[in-house]
Length: 323
Image (cartoon, rainbow, N blue to C red):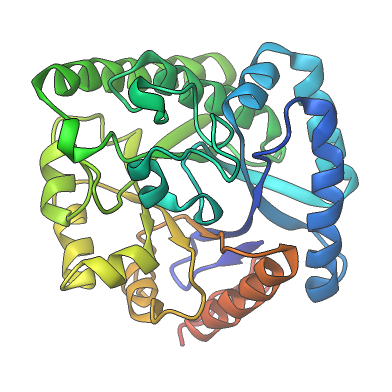
């Protein structure tokens, strides 16, 4: 859903849909139908925005096949669904960062949720080419799925790697891959006229964990194209001063590209209010991606929409006034 912020900026509210068990483009339709049915029960007709989590094999297949991307776009259009964000990071049903930390990369193990399996059976981190390839595949797919009037979108990815084995060699390799990611996104924007930004998702046990670690690790990246995908529930639980942590990152020039809500019942509202203060919107995408089934996600999305409305955001077509 496109919501107008009091500043005039558009904020996209999306419901996360996992395609972790879709092995090929043909198997996506059933998953979309199930999710759409639950969403329509809460929101009726009209366009809805979804954030798709694409496993490695599916992303690779879609990136290589223009006709498959065209069919997926048509399937989304037929169901009144729009896509402005994609993710390759593990989701709440996969254990999130904790799942990556333990080496599980999907609900069924293996490489379902993340890219190719890396060393020791864990999902690939940013020291490995598979992670770069997967993220650029997501960007390539997204520019063809964006609504006609949209000129940019965002992808979410893993928080670099596990802190306990992020040695100097991995750090150097990761820096090279981040430079190639930036170059790949710039080249894509030049070729198709649509920009994609990538947000790295912090989490406990990862290189990107505390605000200070995030700023240090990302200090030299291309901040026009790379930023943070922040799970508000995780930050609320793990950061001693979440709002000050947001300021620490933004003061360092890092954008909170996507605000992720994985626990609708958590007290994340002050953080979202801080990001969406009346005079400015410091995030462009809000994604609700909760554990449980489609009905729980749809109910969570409705709850978050009500909270955003209380902050003064309204549907795009309506005039907007500050709360």
